[in-house]
Length: 416
Image (cartoon, rainbow, N blue to C red; front, side):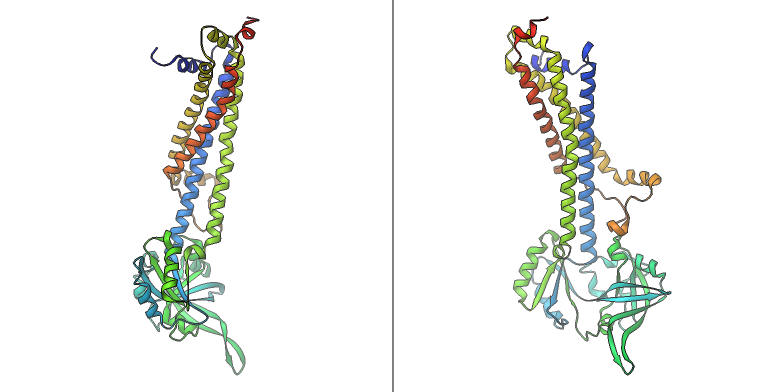
């Protein structure tokens, strides 16, 4: 026998013999519980991480990494601001923009929307809009100053029933004074294309037009709402924004994407933490099953323990035997759970469409902003989950193993 006898005896005890079929059944249930818990933890953690990553990519792709705005008035010296921020080594691009809230009317339907006026030649340096266009060649082709073209989000166009070539009435909240009273400003635009970011928040509520057309519509003259920035590393956006703020002076306000969406990402982080805690309870319950399994095993093996003690086995050796058995349950459950979790998380794009055949759409884009289930398998998270599962399994074996080591040989053999 090449292995230590404690390891050999512990392995023997994991197999059912005569009277302990029920104990082995409970051991199997413990393994299944740990497997399910680890699989669920890895899958849910990967989906939540994927959801957070997908939302971050779509948000920064549609909006901007950072924004510079003037206090209380349109920004007319935007070119000097662009020149200043471009001197920062982590700024990859800068472009002016005009933004405002309007009412869109088409085909008897109306809805509120955010309009964004852009400079078509500069927009690609700060956003991914040019790559998300549909039914149009390019931004420069669709948006020309004075022609009043407008590009609608795909879901917004579907709601209005508008297609390329249709006319859309744009109504601003500011009114003009006329002899007959206050009249809202209305301008007719032609739909020249659509865009689809795959995020309901933008596809349903945003429209894009040329900056000069939007400035004229909103009576901003030659001014802009601000300057949008693209940064080298989105994770450093708060630090870079602070540095830019210090360099351009206190006449401007600088914000980044983490500030603009702070509440949303805090909610996702809290939900991710709570899901981890709740699903960890599955592994904890399985660990309690290990306790009950080993306690019954110790009671069933009283005579065996006493014989080993009379043959010279130390209390530490007896404790090691039951530690081997409990640890083996934890290792098997954890390994199988990790394999199952990795496979499920890696193929979530196949599993979810299969489930949707029977249940319908899993994600409502109006609620979750995206229409597909993302997954981002992160190996550090897998390692932490495996260590947690293994640690709980080892902790669950300590009391039964200690109790076995305290068995008195004389008392155990008194009635044999």
